[in-house]
Image 1: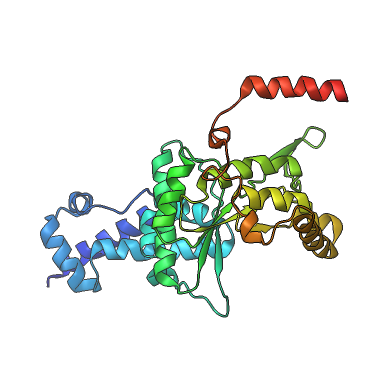
Image 2 (image 1 turned 180 degrees about the horizontal axis):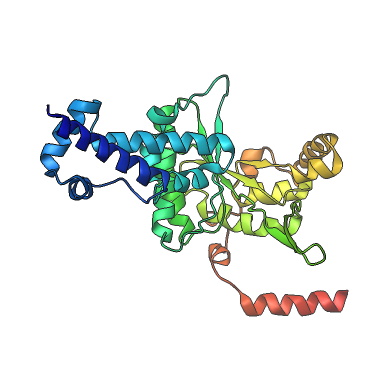
Length: 315
């Protein structure tokens, strides 16, 4: 091989490195490399592999994966690391996740994928975001043998459709819902600051609606997360269709002993209302089983406004 060809290959490799360093969206095409070096695409592809042992695409991908690992270690999150590595979406990352990132599980009986994505790129549409989420679950499902639950936010264009896609992708459980923490403005310090607000029982109805609508429609188990503070809240979630409930904010407020109180309160409620078991309670008011299933699907806007008048009279 001539020195000129070796120099051209090195120039092509340098160009790929510059593009990756600049966080350019997507891999460099063979045509782009051909235009840059003046060598035909077919010939450049063949000589590149002879000199460096990999194709231009593989070389580009290795550089981006290196940047991705660096981003993940720095704590910017999957979405941030993905875009910093120059991937327009997470699809290709998730497709290669097990091999490229080394997904392993040591000692865990199950894992929960906490999908915390804040799309900031206006070029990324809702369909691609949902597709990336499904691909991620498929990749993790292939890589591990333990059950996988997926914790989601409610902010998807067609949540019911996404839930069924994740169910088909192998998710063993769906956790409804993730709480996306919102930054706040400090007008005195002129700063944008993170603000943690614990969940409140007022957040539970959103979970109840989707638990009720999905119960019996997906194979995956359903968990209620957010707004569960009392034993009655546990009852409401189970009646709507939850298989389990998650409690965090209430334990932070009242301490770990509150969990024993929730269990005792649930047992007392079941006995008082003559339920023989939790299975008898679960899903009894889901859309598939309640006497008026359409109540879960309609807005009832005028009825809600009239209920406010009733509450005001009794205040």
